[in-house]
Length: 520
Ligand SMILES: Nc1nc2c(c(=O)[nH]1)N[C@H]1C(S)=C(S)[C@@H](COP(=O)(O)O)O[C@H]1N2
Ligand SMILES: [Mo]
Image 1 (cartoon, rainbow, N blue to C red):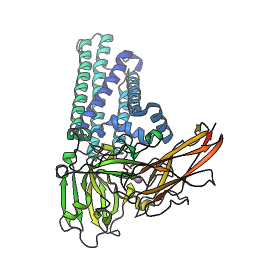
Image 2 (cartoon, protein in one colour):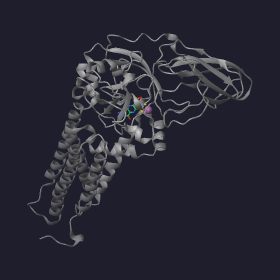
Image 3 (cartoon, rainbow, N blue to C red):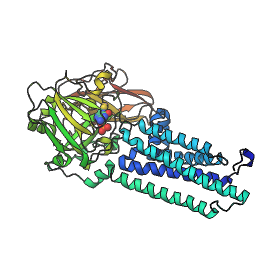
Image 4 (spheres, rainbow, N blue to C red):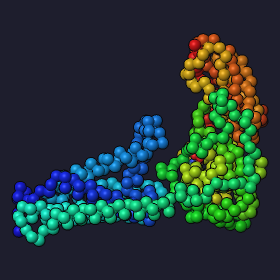
């Protein structure tokens, strides 16, 4: 008969109790990871909680983490989470030295947190909730099981009973749970590896275009004088999207549907695209959210097929105006059909970037790139659907949020060196930077010292194409003191970049980039 008085109940040894909590945690995480392996790596409750934490982190803290830990910021986060969870699990065990209830409540709360995190992910279906559910069941189950074995043992120690499990069998049960958890976790990891986009991408290897872009001449940038390099590495290429987690699409699971106002509806698999003669084009992309002087502008060699060619094969019907493109994560963009059909412009369905398959965060397996248009109306990443339609029939994602329907990139220029508020030696001061007017071309860049100085033409880098940026530099004789310098570009249509300041909404910022610096 069981005594109801708490002080007569057996108490588990302190460390034994803590250990039971930790083993239950391991079982929970491993079970969730295993089930996630069948569904999607992001369904793993551990990763989902981590991703949730990232999304909830205030921007300043995120900034701090990136500055302090660099590319290791996510590892630091996951490591920190692991420490917190192990401590919490040990506490759950310790507070359950008499009754398993407090521990079970804590572990269940953990499981619900995991479930909440998974349910908040935009890229996961409700099936993904099976992973945190598995965690919950495994965590509570293992905790309850080990706890009752150990309690029976402790009770036996006090009452000398023979039916209780031996100390050895309690330890064996615990060890068995750890081994099973290890196997389940590793299994989940293996399964996820066969499912995530990165392994699919790695299997593709380098992409060799049948028609490579002309080599970039050495004098296409003035990187030694402070400008960016002409081509931006995939790592440094700016990134803008609404995706909280990068959509994971395997090339072998991907296809692109081309339909709507066309005579021949089409569907292309990854191999259909890859086995075409691939072309390569050097293109400077720009985000409409780029402020004057901002960094949301980058250049890459994109590899893929001509988008206009795909449209011509589908035979676009008269009256079609808009390519309404949809990403696997539901994001949409509307691009003018005429821009895609214009062979001079060179719109692409891209699968590669700087020789590699598209990086996952830049749209793997495939994205659109239309030179001369801001990204939100032209550059759908993870694209899976192209509907040919009219402007009236469909409205893309950003249009209902105040952004314009038509958004050609505005002629712009930026000073990269000196940096704003930098102090440099007095005397000859070199000023350098970049200018862009995609699809039109940069004709001239002018720089002036002081608010009323006369405009001085800058030396331009070798032109690579109308769709790419152009670097510039010039020099001024500058006495000691504080100064400001201003840049403006003139494009090949004869248009001089306006000094009228406009914000990024609705269709791109305008104004001249001005920086202040000091000479000593
Ligand atoms: N699926 C998807 N595609 C997208 C976006 C997005 O939010 N989701 N953002 C667009 C915007 S605003 C820009 S500027 C470019 C940026 O592409 P990048 O991240 O490769 O530089 O992608 C475009 N394609
Ligand atoms: Mo953008």
